[in-house]
Image 1: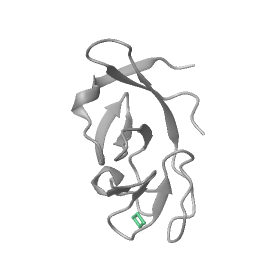
Image 2: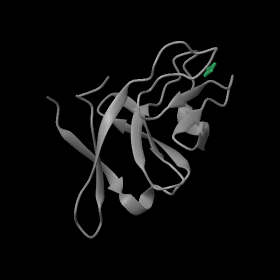
Image 3: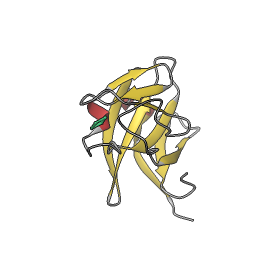
Length: 110
Ligand code: FES
């Protein structure tokens, strides 16, 4: 099992946004929904390999900016074409400290 990698303070990730972070060699999109839930998924669209963190966050999904595939942040599954392959999903932890450090773990992926 891989280790947790701290990527920033909870306040660094505003609601309704996605942020590209590197965890080891992996490009990860840290996504905060408008209701404040945090998810980590592969930042690379499975259709044509563009950065998903530049896409639109809506409810519990992120939409690829290039061709519009939408991915469920809980499962990584695309809801429609052109993408047909799920994103890798990763575990996210928020430390119970004043700064609420956010960490991502690459293991336990789908
Ligand atoms: S590159 Fe993302 S849907 Fe085509």
